Length: 420
Image (cartoon, rainbow, N blue to C red; front, top):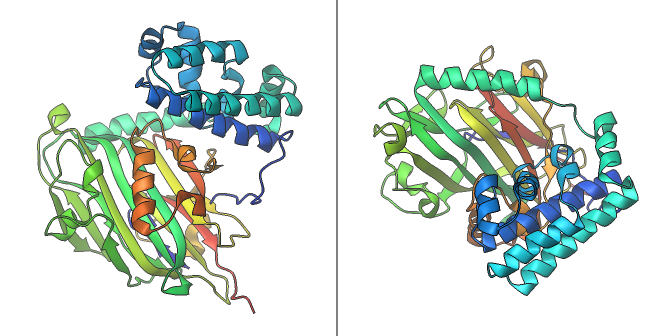
């Protein structure tokens, strides 16, 4: 395996390339994600924050019950938790009317209405109504409720914030994997990673990103990288994706130890005064072999060393790549196994995961993330800099609330033999 540990290191169970049949369970799931992206797009068009139900109700002039269902639909990426709460046709019509009054275009409204209509049709053919669909989800159609695990992880998060003196709202990793233009037998990757709402509670420096590439045996491998948005004179500053850093471009210090390169946020103000969004972006050339005659994998990892409320891991795989066994996602224990990068140990290192990855709807709207308002803008910027289109990729998203620190989130896939 060639595995990137770029504080990070490709699709969850890879679906068939064709669209799911509309009357199937997967057809409902696909229609839900498309409708979700369209509704989120309308919120953005009319300038209303979909993460705030009360404010949304007041600004749109709709009742709180409808606002709650709409904002839940946008915020919740797991259809098992939100599909049965999608507003009905009449309620949606009230939302569309409110958006029209706030200046939403006819085209945006029609697109959203068509997506909602497709969801209603898929739901009707699959189960008949929302109540029956919720029963289907509860009886094996979706993962079991993981509220107990999430509550336990939240306690760990709260304690870790006090002990280490740092916290963040969202930790994200976004990777695009595609054949190298100058060598089709190799794979390139566009890699973006960062923190939204990072806040220090003590003034000491804090590592934001770790960079390394390891082979399946754990040996360190060399690689070639280029900044996606080169700026600044030091390596740390050059890798910043400055248009998405706020409120100011941070000072980044780089240190090397133990086979890793560590990118640290320099000493600065604490609390809300030091609230920061930091984004790094690189292009990694000829990072993986595209083919292997022996069992090998390629993948990415993100080291969870900062207490965060949410981790989001998006993998966009070029449609020209074959991933027959899908993408495997594992949460690796770094408390008991702090320095192990040997893939043969991963099963033993894995912690239980009830969360699963979901396939993203096609197009840039399918990449919408309610926790990061500018996320689709970033995706568009990255693909443009790579000289590609988002439509060249199939995307997959893994989300987890309050991921435990001292873990590594790994996503990887098998390499195929070279076609003869």
